Image (cartoon, rainbow, N blue to C red):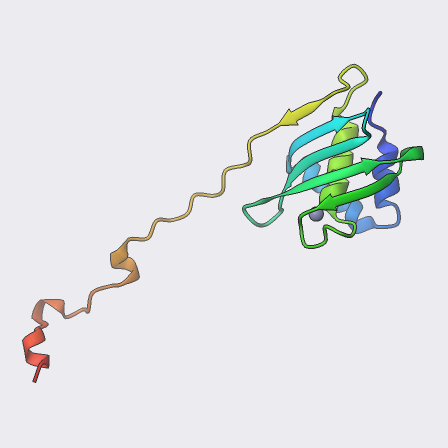
Length: 140
Ligand SMILES: [Zn+2]
């Protein structure tokens, strides 16, 4: 059983933004994890957030006639339609083959761009005239 494109099409139908965002997310390898259980009609996955260094968990229950019965995502729009759920559906279509039924892919989350290290001295620079600074002179 392949994963029908219709799940995604039905889900994003009428919402061009959702369609485009999910296409971009799949293209950009933002789908980090995808599990599909055809017996339970259940899809589970993880999608990297587009801006922030985090990912969202997505749970989708598939229904009759290639529809999505229920979906949860832990992003801010997770109760409603969001492009993370759409991305999982699109990823499923592109990656679940007929032979590979109980499929699961796991990628490692993309490494966050390395943060610049800041030393304590940079955070709290010493007074410029530290050489001549004397506590004794201030303590009158
Ligand atoms: Zn979401």
